[in-house]
Structures are given as C-alpha cells and as structure tokens.
Length: 145
Length: 459
Image (cartoon, rainbow over all chains, first blue to last red; front, side):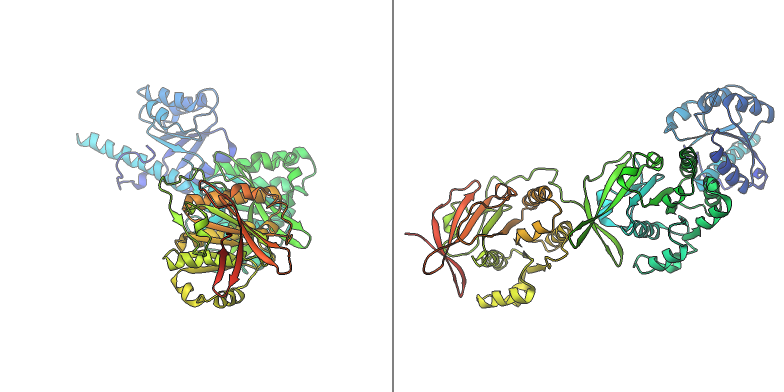
C-alpha cells in the first residue's frame, strides 16, 4: 500500500501547489513534514487534532490528507472513515502516516496509502506524487468514459 | 522485521546478531581512550554513501581537527568520502554561542539541511556539563530524542559515561542500544572488552567480548559460547590414532573423533612431542592438523620436529598448520577467533593446544576460563575436530591434582605424565580416563627416542 497502484508518469506541473492537510501533534514531525513537502512544491496546512482536520477538510477540500493515527479528539483511522463515508469529502486522498504498524487497519478504513514513520523524505514525497498521479489518471479515465 | 545496519566490524555484528537496528538511538559509553570514537567513525565510513549520508557532530570533548587527524590514522577512514558522504560539523562552537538548550533545535536544522541516515554526537556527555539543572538536562535529552526519532536516521551518542551513571542520566532511558567499552588492567597488562548493556527489541550474545584496536579499526572477538545444539556422536565410533608405539593399543576403542584429550604432566615429560605425534599422524593420513603453540616459536618447533626425524617443510605442505602466539599480551578470545577461522578455512581435523596454562593466564577470571574450556571442547565436538590439549603440572614427582578448573571433567580422555624419582629419572604415562572406552590403566614407562615417544608396556 505504500506504493499504491501503477506507476504513472503523468505527475503534472499542476500538482505543484496542491494543498496537503497534515494532521500531526508532534511539532518536530510537523517541521520536518512542512520542510520536505514545501521543498517538493506543495502547499501544507496543519491540524493538531482529528476533529479540527475533519472540519478543515470540509472547508478547503485538500488534495491529500496525511494523518498520524494517534491524534487527539478523533483518531486518524476514524477521521479517514469519516472522510470516505461522506460524498463531499470522499474524493480527498488519505495517507495514514504513523509509527503504528497498522497497514491493514488503514486499508480497512479506506485509506489510499500507508507509510510507516519515522520520516523518510524520499518515500514521503514519492508516495504523495504517486497518489496524485493515480488520481489524475482515474480522473482522465472518467472524462474519457 | 527490524532492519539492521552493520557496525563495520564483523565480530561486533555477530555479537549484535546482525548489527544495530535501524532508526534507533545508540549510546557508546566508556572511559576515555577505550575506542568509542574509533568505532563511531568506523561505523560512519562503513555505511555512508552519497545517498545515505552520515552527519558527525563534535562537541566540547575533542576539537574537530583532532578527531579528523586521529581518524585518518585508521584504514577505514576514506578522505574522499568527507564532504560527500560523511559530514563533520563542530556542534560545540554553535552551542557555545546559542546555549545548550538549543541543542535539539540545532540538530533538527542540521538534519533538514543534510538529510543524513546516520547521526553521531561526540561527545554527548560533554554537553551535560553545560547544563545547570537536572530538569533542563531531562528536557534537552527528551527533545533531542524526539528529533532523532522523528526522522529516519540511526543515531549514536558517544560519552565517557561510567556504569554508575546509567541509573542517573536520562540519556540511558532514551537509548535503544547501549554498548559499553571497558579497559581491564591486570598489573601491567591491559585488555579491552565490550558489552551490550541494552538492545531493545533484539537479542545479543551476552557477556564481555574482547576487542582490540587495529589499523583498520576495532576488531571484536565474540565470547566463546557453548554451541546451541549439543554435539551428536555418531553411532559408529571412529577411531583416531596417535601412532605412538604402545599408546593406541592401550585404549580399546581408540580416541573418538571429536573428542578432547588432556595430556597433563610436568615440564619435560613429553607433552609437546605427544601432541606433534598426534598432528603428524593425522597429516600422513590426509587429515589437516593445527598446532597452536605459545611457548616454542616456529624455529624451535621446527628444530624439535627435525630432531625427531619429521620433515617440517614437507609436513607443512601436506596439511600441518602452525599457529604460534607469544603468551605475552595474548587475549583468550582473539586466539580463539583465529583458531576457529583457521580450523574452518583449513578444514582442520586435528588440533593441539600447547598449553592450556598459557590461555589460562590470559583470562581475566578463573570461572571464565573454565567456561571457556567447556565451550571450546563442545565446539570441537560439534565440528568433529579431535583435540589434544596439554596442561603443565608444576610438581615434577608428586601429582596432587590435574587442575583447579575442572578441566579434567570436561576432557574425554586424560593422559597423565610424570617422573619417577630414582637414580635415573624415568618418565611414565598412565591413562586416567577414556570416555566411553575401556583402557589399560596401568602406569607405563615413556621413553623419548630419536623417533619420538614410545610407551614401553609394563610386563
């Protein structure tokens, strides 16, 4: 799941500037995520608990939501389920990014990708790009169909 | 499964059952001059590549220049890697300006700038001295651990810590791995040991492991342990002869292959020659043999062999191997490490250790030596190598006991040599024990002739 689907080479320039909402309570991890994601050309916003992230997702519809499982008020897996069960937010790509070995639980919750911490910047950026490319590819197919 | 990184030292990887777990924090502790920095740099250079960089942060213990100068005296140091794969930075200077409380922040900035897979802080303990309160020390250590654990890097905190600090300082609580470097002094001799104090989430070989600092860095000799599986003796016992006239006939089934025979006796009683007989007979039968000696150097041994009609050069070409070590500055586990290597590489079938007492004197405690001999005999049995060990008794005539170390219990067979008092000093030999075989237990005359040892059967 850390390498979702095929490996399309259609990651396009329009993805730079895509908004990524990160749910993370650890300030050090926040700094590292912001640094590496912004360096790769993404816009990054943070929420420090699950409920705030859910509300912000409804408001701004980020392309991707990256969430730790262990976050206050609403855990990352429940947040993922909530997003995926609502038509208006189910299109948001969800990546579970956690210290917990919970790949199966992430899949059950409907997550699009799972990554194990600590941060490996190359893996993080590569996974984000693949998710976006996959989404573009499926959007293209929808239009064709 | 936890991925492990090599320490750059095969013996230490063996002790750690593969190496240091990735993405962990390791404390390298020990008195000054024990080899911590050498191991840290050895590890950095062994693992660092342009894609997996190492960040080596010096503090206030040794200036960066000194670390570089010393590092370059070792074979592992590759100057071409500096600034490409291994990055040295002087953290001490930065902390002097900003204050030690900024340590986690500065390390985080450096991680973001260099994106290293390996981080070293040397010395971390020296930074403790800049901290004024225990509370501040705990907070800084906690925050640093958070930084090092948040990013995918394997970290090493090096310090001149002693054992009693382990319960006091928070650095030991955040450590996943603790390796302790120990210098053991006995009179004028010094031996170095390494111990795994903590290895979270993984097993390791317990106890003290000897190591030495060589040109290519640290070499660890894992402590000899009893093989995990007890050796299985074949149902059909294979006889291993000595070709000493009169001796083989005294044992009904002969010496078993894989057995250990102790040859004990005072100086000059014929122990070394019996050992040479044993090895030479094996070589003549196509069984490579290793003679491990600590007293006679190769020239002296060659002279003894030639004097008894053997041709040392010819035997050496046909499978007689000699491993000579001076008993001065000898380290038990280092000898064992080389012995095992040579047994495996040379497909050795027979080994003579001449003499056990020299190994005993290189051991730091008597219990350790006893355990060592037991493990050694079990290792030989598991490898199907037949071994003869000589043991020097101090009294020429009165034999009170074979050894204090219960070595006799660990040997399958025991040959006791002694002198008989009289007008003419006469050598004798008696078989005290043969495990699993009947034997002639009478005392027989032993003569050393121009062709070696001969047992004259008592009438």
